[in-house]
Length: 212
Image: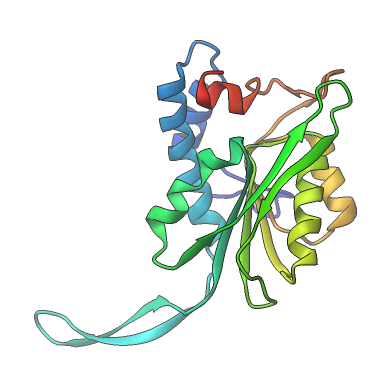
């Protein structure tokens, strides 16, 4: 589903393109927007966890004994950046049998485009934890870097960032601080405007998700 050697890993699938077009459309209503967000996040969740470790399990089919692969007992933690990141969490809960959820609340000051922290609740993190940080819009990269700093300070070292729309500036900001961090996104857009919104983008993701 991803283009080879893409930095970041760019989702390349006709269904993803279809969903993205409707997400961008300003006439899409919040209820439909939430469904589309779920669908795109599901595709991203599958791809961002492609390298999860598995182990062999022997089972009995209706016909004979067989060996198959199951997920290893591995601590998977999904951490949304509030509030918009909440729209991306459900696919992880639906897909994986063993997942914890942490929350990092960051609010962007629309005058300065700098995020302030107002909430943080994380499960215990270790070097063995697989952390997936989800934030629909990677714009300036400031919020993502702040959140990455938080999970790193709590002991996590195996971290992946998943976004729906990213800007070149946001990717560069994350890369500057975390050069090898895997980034998965459904769209790499053109640039930021003077107000630090992504172009062509889709507007304020949280507002469109919740109808505010």
